[in-house]
Image (cartoon, rainbow, N blue to C red):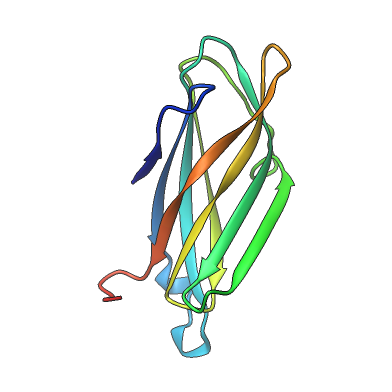
Length: 129
């Protein structure tokens, strides 16, 4: 699990990844991964997740950027001390890759800020790289 700590607005991001073998087809360069994100509000005020920005890089250094409103169809309001979890996925053409990015957040007092999503590895289990 990767974790980003100590952002200025006290929002910590944790990540767990999983290779989805039954949806993958390595012979046709299709590798499917799931990732579960935890967004913890360590501040004393609610924060709202407005949008996401992902940078996905495969093992051939092909970069894809993804931007969008909210996550999994939601713009959650995260209360102080609360952790919001969601699971999503990514499909790569290689068995290894990385993801990183940021969430645009809105604090209760109207300040927008970026919560950094630390780089994390997408990889097939029992693979040597």
